[in-house]
Image (cartoon, rainbow, N blue to C red; front, side, top):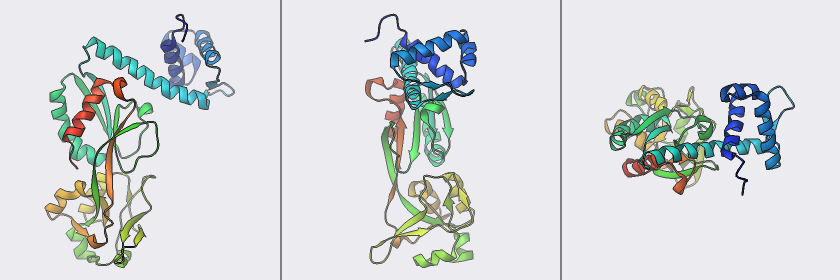
Length: 301
């Protein structure tokens, strides 16, 4: 147990500010302390922990592996303290700023429709929504919840599954009228296959042949995109063939704007959607818990 005279939360706040500011002097100005006081506090913290947190061998401060881990934990602890103070002051009613990061298709076709209902239910919450198909670091972006598609990488984040949707190959009627409709997997060699450009995407499209054997077809085309909604719109415009989650293009298929292709070779794989966040159980801020419960109640994929 720490001695009563050690202000551990204060030490953490100073350490985090040093990392964010990039120097002792900049952190000292922000905290209205002297650089020597900041330097001494970090030195005491390192001595108490028995680990070097910051490398001072170069002009630019660099975190050691222990320092990087302590920084991540410190951000979580400070966020939990802020949430605890706000909730205690408000009688634990969900309130405050909620930062949500979502992949673009879900954000545009689900989240934007659901947020008015959520805010009507919780009027004391302010939502900051950011839409991107890039995988962000929740701690660095100070995000409370990120909504992600596809398999999750191993991490310290907690995940809550919101649903999953079968993948489907689609093209516009205009594209198929100009280029022909593929009837066999070999026909794809004569078509423009639209690829995703982000690193986590697979290098090929999976199929099963007439014997049930799994096949991965390389994606050959003249375009790659990093935004699922941009992929949908590009496909609607007749640029080529895309592979997207069925929920994303179901209204377009129903309206005849997109045509499913090669369904007899579809392996039936599904793309999951998760809400990921930091913390769990009683340590989860009520605004985050309220949002997660709301998503589980309302999202349909």
